Length: 522
Image (cartoon, rainbow, N blue to C red; front, side, top):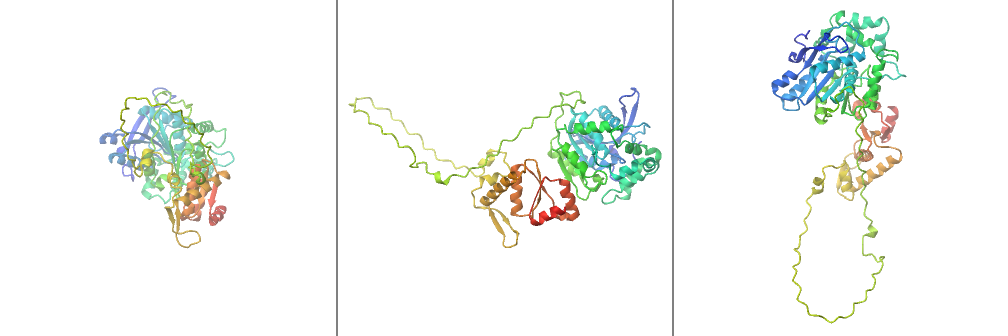
């Protein structure tokens, strides 16, 4: 069954059906999947994909969620940029894929996705992109296919439910005994509640598009089954599989991106924090004001494609034919060489002819020897005088392509030239001119002080300091230590600033007096 024509933003040229053999069943058992796939369009353009992005929706959406990403990736390829094949699936029982009438717990859904990629014959690198429970399924595929995996991208999702925290209220309500079937299958209540989570509200035509594959209770069985498959305790059938995936995610060493909407009553920032703890190298972008349907709230497609262009996916491990083997040893982490601070010259010891040296020993002249006639020595021309060549400006920089951000602070640490002008110094008054010498000295002092109080490499430091010379010095001091700077924009307002600061979960807060007062309030 294919989607109807006229759904906003969906080009039906990407829509296709695929017959897939289901693993663990007789060889004759096949399932029909509906996909959005731009492979045919890329072939028409005559471009070779650099990889595949495998998009997996959650509950109760379908591949329509990814329509903008499929289109944007195809348009980018047509414009001569990197060509990504994008496959957005409708999971079985969902969207326009087959209604099998069977229970499909999490482990089965992960296996289903593997069956599909095997049938499609995907080669790496494959970038997984998941939302909601599709994020869990996509990560399950990722940890089971290290030989193909290039990177992982996620929208709001979760892989672990803390033991001391209840599951989100909307899910608790949907899971409550007789409410489950009534809210998810008999009526479209769960679907309608999800569609109401968009910020701003979805246009009526887009809502109708999301409802299209779920007209009638017979088409909504997968919605109820997905909710019922949420592990509420360790005895749940899918609890072990969820724990397996959550544990294996910690071993992923591929690039990772998380695009997050903090206004999400289901997957709150605590789930983002858990994911960041499992993938500490991930790039994270929180869209203030966006919520659960972050794909509808913001231009996530542009952000994802930009990230893909800047981060080269890991090459597929062609020597690991068993893609189910996830026990690879992580690559060793090579620490950069220590930064050597420039040492100021000792002005008291500049004269190397100082009188403190040992006196030269007295050498007796040799005895007088009568001269003997010898042939004259050949005349040796003196070597040509080589004029000193002045090093052109920037030559030292060009000779070394790798420079730390504080390079000029070191190079110009003795210069009285202007480094910055603080147009609005604290307390008002005339603009303050800060020299390189002053800025370099202040950065060193701050870095030493931060190190003394325990700020370490990798610590997250929230800065509540007004823009100006002080903020510049603090930022550079944090960078010299290797700390991660977190800056919240005061323009977010009190509520937005509160979410931003709490969501950053800083280890330390640095602020001017008003900022520290605000930090206590936040």
